Every structure is written in structure tokens, then in C-alpha cells.
Length: 220
Image 1 (cartoon, rainbow, N blue to C red):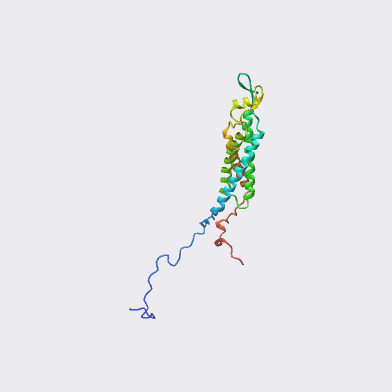
Image 2: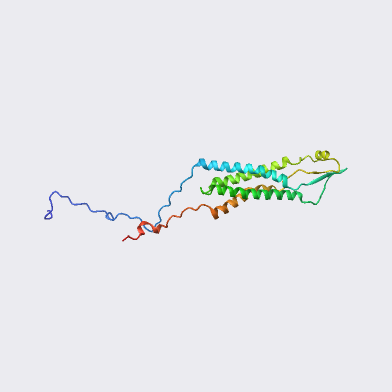
């Protein structure tokens, strides 16, 4: 038995599944997925890090020469029975350590400032920080070795014989506080972080998710 006014060859439509007439809609209250950050090419990063490190090594040679020139000297004198200090209570050794630390402090701050100014437009990067750290440590080691090797020799007896009895001569330039070798890289990192926080390149903040097109008022 068929329903009146129904074609004989028409088949009844299958029942619709629950919810099929209402497709799933995205939840407007959920924030959109964060866009993937663009990765920088590895080649330019390695080149910047290497150049920053080499600049630190070159600056270390200058720091070593300045340390040799500015550091106070421990003076000795050859007596008839022994080699004695001219000023037994002097603080020349501590002054030499302090001079090295101050020069390293200035070198670290200056290198960080120059690196920040040269790379500020590109937004710095881990290569700059790594180059400053490695270059600062290498520069400190080079300055230490250069200053001690170019200064008076460590053979006190030979120096005393060369100077003669009763003539003052300088002891070898030494760095007693080896912790001063870390002043340069630590200063560079602190200055770089401070400059980046105060004057660094700012990334544009994305609009809040509630300001999406589904919340925009219709024009008209």
C-alpha cells in the first residue's frame, strides 16, 4: 500500500543520523593555534658567532698589553744574603689582579655594546650571546698569558744576577685571582641582556583571540 500522490518508483529516504543536520562548529571561545616561529638559517648564525668570538680574541691581545703597561709591579732587590721585597707590605699583587679585572670589565661592557648595536636590527640571537661568552673567555685567557709572557721572567735568581746587587728589579707579572678570568664574559652577558631588555627589537604582539572575525560587528 502506497501513500497517495507518491510516485511508485520513489524509495523512502533513509533516516538521518542524529546531529547530521548540524555540522560541528569551532568553539569561538577557544584561542587559535599559535603560529610556528620562523627559524633562522644556521649558516648566518654560525658566521655571526664566529666573528664575535674572533673579535673577542683580538680584543684580548689589547687587554693583555694594557695590563702589562698599567699593572703595578712587585719590586725586588738582591741583598748580600737573599732577595728581598722592596715593600714587604705593599699591595702590588692585589693591584695587578684588580687592574686585570677592571680592564676585563671594560672590555666586556664595550664588546656587548658594539655587538648589540651591530645586531639590533636582526634581533640579536643566540649566536651573539654565545660569541660574546666564548670570545670573552678566550680574550681573558689570551690577555693573561700575553701579559705574563711579555713581562719580566719568572727566574728570580737570573733576574737578580742580571740587575746586580742592591739594584731593584721587577718580579714576574702574575694573576693571583683566577676568578678574574670570568669577569669579561659575565659582564658581556649582563650588559647584553640589559640592552636587549631596554632597547631590543620588539616583536608585534598578535591580536587577542576574542578579536577574531567571528566577533567583528557587521558593517552598515
